Image (cartoon, rainbow over the protein chains, first blue to last red):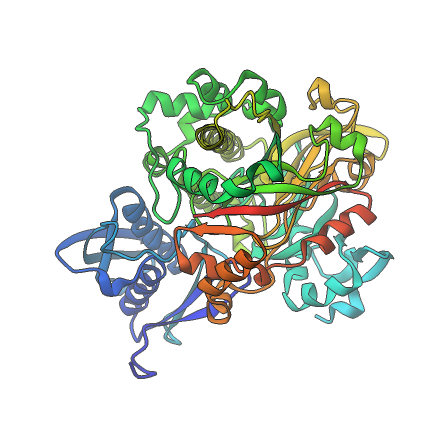
Length: 143
Length: 484
């Protein structure tokens, strides 16, 4: 993938893992952060898009909405085994307040067929930044 | 900030960040580290976090850092801070997501020579009996009512259900049951995340380890803890409250994120979100944290029960006949309501220990009768290639660190760098050559947990010993390791 085409970069932190998502729009930043999180959870190349799920989040601030959105996906993974290989996000302009609707496509985890990589404990507020004007957002996960 | 200029040296293992270093600091920062360890600590940017904690409203005494300190979120890992119960705050970031992550140590009557040919079999049997690994689910299906009982009763529930022995309660911090759990402050999501994960080890740095006593430093104290001779076999269990605690922390941090503004609290880091201890949000969090702490104690109790069964399955005699008594179980991510002496007066404080261990001396009412005259056992897990320690709490810890000490080796290398640097197969082979059998569910986790990704446990423990905040009792080395 070309440098411009990368959805996110991993950021070095001592005990946990952070990602810096890239995106030319607010919606892309959130979608690419979600891609980054799924890539931490599992080898997404093994996930097939056979079903879809919808997730919504709303907040007065973009950082808070990022934590809420990714936490929703994390809970969906841990409680129902939902792994995604495609993420589409829609965020109407004009916030705050902001409203996000995401459609994720993927399937339910099957041991042996999907390779898991990390247990993510939580999506944190630490060093959290959402900078649509500069085309990046940073999120730190507690691993 | 040029920390080398800022730091003042109090002794060969204690460093001070003066209160005047940064605006907003209400107290000093105080760090336990040797000169050699200070360089990496400075490079890790973690002293900023020690200074940030010193700005928490109602902080009493210093913002403390143990020698295994490393960069966390909000609080540093290895951070200790006490706040006033009447006009101080509670901060979930001072506990961490893995509420009551902790460690327990079992002693046995066995010697290394009794198990040398069986280590592989023992580890493999534990592997079969204790669910572990990424995305692992437990063996039992809890009802909502049972989960409520786990939350409010902790280990008492487990023992009643047949997991372990009545006397295990005496050797668990808080008797394995923190009072004041408020189940109404537990979300449906936390319940849903937690229910299938009770009785699971998890992954990451969590482990089960068969160890032998390598060296005894204090024979009398060791004997009181059931450690009688070098070569004696012990078992260590390291895990926490799994997805249940993680979600409790996430839920309450979100509430505090909003509430912190209402209380007019200004913070240098959003992750430090906090509210007054006696506010509705504060009481809600503390009640939910107690529920998660009880979940974690129950989790370790159930795992210990299966470890005992595994030993019995492989070796023959019953766990009782193998002398598999619990030495102690303690939390190293928790906030506790405790009484302490502050400038000659007794005060009730909320002591946040995030990656730090309670280390109470003899005479404290919290200790069971058989440890009352010796002091509290302190268990410090190392990384899988090196050693772990059994220490004892001291009066000096009471005076200097609210009865706290370190919690482990502490990472020095990031997970991403570990995976790039180390190969899991090589780690397994190298440890095998040293007589340590390692079995892990995930090769990637093993590479992330490479021994060289951690600080030197001997150095970390040495600093707590020299600083007087806990004393060495015994050094334990691994023979068999099960990683999630």
